[in-house]
Length: 138
Image 1 (cartoon, rainbow, N blue to C red):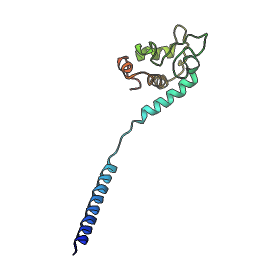
Image 2 (image 1 turned 135 degrees about the horizontal axis):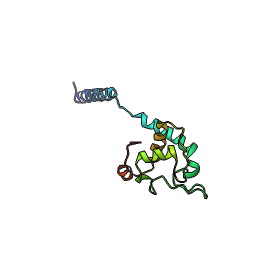
Image 3 (image 1 turned 90 degrees about the vertical axis):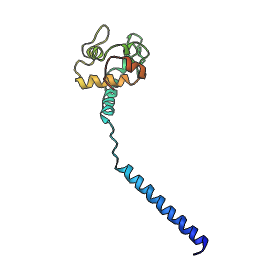
Image 4 (image 1 turned 45 degrees about the horizontal axis):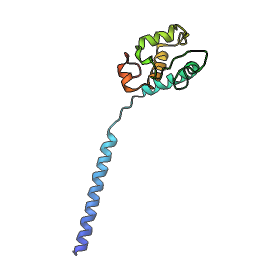
């Protein structure tokens, strides 16, 4: 066998072995299952729908507040004080209303109230979410 044939054979063997190793690697990765928590995505989608139907008129599209000049609806996007309030207080406010806020969530389920609050909390910084007393949307 000539040198170039030996080199070609060696190179071919190297390619075959490399390809096999790559194929084996891809197979082992394909067997791994990646668990994706879709429950949070579903909750945020529900919250967005509820927010856009009930809250956007006063609190604005991005939660920056004061969407109507005659309604002093505060910002809830993290630029004001909303993140200082525990989840339970906000859920009660949605259900019962208070001061100038109507009880927009009086007929909502707990799941719906939590979903809209989780949607709002996604606008907050990680530091605000960590400092706020509550686990909704986490």
